[in-house]
Length: 149
Image (cartoon, rainbow, N blue to C red; front, side):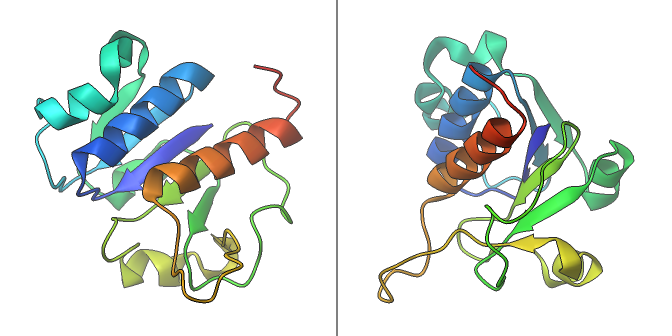
């Protein structure tokens, strides 16, 4: 399983997701362009001293993500299917867009059947923080797959 961030903008979110991936032994894939440099101190600070255990891959574009294999699940506020209503597989890609614009329209349109949402109860809240979404999705997938750690 991989967590894929398409053009993330906020280094603290990516660092926090890196820490999540280190703790779950999950590969983190970042799709360029990034809104920060990998050496960014805020990125490193959010990931704390876990960077040696983060399986990080930076790829130039969406085609490079698809070349990794696995089924992409696209998390978007536009979806009607809940993230808990699908069956995850070990090689799935959990895909998230940038904090301000979400996933690019071309990626969304190419994978319309793979859209998932994390329900928000309060109508005044548009979405959760990117790092929160990644954690919710990854732990649901791991729960379904019988992961105990």
